[in-house]
Image (cartoon, rainbow, N blue to C red; front, side):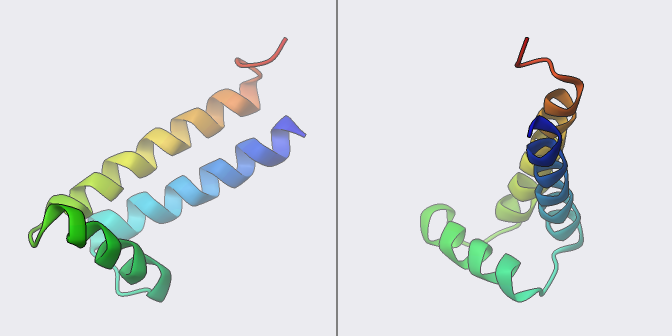
Amino acid sequence: MNILWGILMILIGAFLSISGFLKSNFVIYRILVARSRLLWGEGNAVHSFYGVAGILVILVGILLLLGVFYK
C-alpha cells in the first residue's frame, strides 16, 4: 500500500512542480492558481510556490517508497 501512495505522491508532485515552473495553462493548474491568487495577489510567487511545493511532495513520496515512515 505504501508503494501506491508513494507513486501517487510522486506523480502529483511532478505535476505541481512542472506546471509551476513552466506556468502551465492546464485546466486543473489554472484553477489552483486562481484560488491561490485570491490569497496572495497577482505575481509570480504563486507559480514559484507550486514549483517548490511539488518538489517537496516528490521527496515525501520517495520517502514513502523507501519505507521511512513505517516499520
